[in-house]
Length: 120
Image (tube, rainbow, N blue to C red):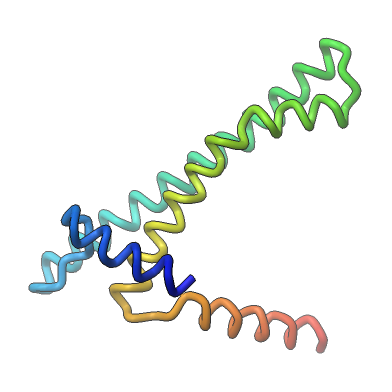
């Protein structure tokens, strides 16, 4: 994940896609824009999941067994889903980099916190 964050930092600076830090108003505008863009990408994942279930039902009506219909639909959206997940990761890396967070460490710390909560 550290490599992804580092790649993202360089890539976004190169394309001038990084969150601006030169003054409060530019940072605020950049953060809000990136929040909207991330939200849009998450919504695109939701649309693909809807397509997954719609296609599964259509294929079942056409006579495919449910598991086969589901496998077909899953294959149909897989490439696009990968692209949308990648867009989300890019925006999350951008936010993490702005706040100087180590996503990998934060992730494992959070998973441990959840595990401790579940064990109670």
